[in-house]
Image (cartoon, rainbow, N blue to C red; front, side, top):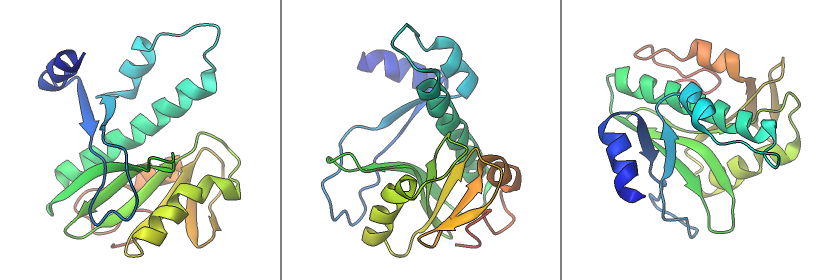
Length: 175
C-alpha cells in the first residue's frame, strides 16, 4: 500500500500532510494525512456503501478543498511556508496548520452550517500549546462570528479572499 501511495505522489495525483510537531507538548500521531490532489477526484474515487453517510464524505471533501487552496497559497506566496495537520493520540485534531516565515495559523473545517462551541475544541487546545498561532474555524453557514476569541468564517469568504503575495489571510490578518 505504501508503494502505491508513493506512486500517486510521484504522479502528482496525491499528497500527504505531515503532522505538526514543532515544540510538541502533547503526544501526536505519527502518520501523515493523505489527500488526492483534487476534492472532486476524492469524491469520485471514494467507495460508498449503505453504511457511509453523505455528510462524512462531504466533510472530508470540503477539508480537502481547503487544503488544496492553502497549498496553492503557499506555492505562490513569496515567503516560505509549509502545510501540516495536527492530531494528538487522544484524538484532538486541527485540519490544517500553516507555519512559515510570516504566518502561523491553524484552520479547522466544519461542513455544518451551524457553529457550536464544541467545534472550536481542537483549535483551543492547539492555541493553548501554541499561543503565537492564529486559529480560524471555517464553516458552511452564512455569517461570521467569534467563539472564545476564535473567528468563525464561512468557508466561501475565506477561500475567495485567500490571495498569495498580498500580505494577509482572511480572518487572520498579516500573521
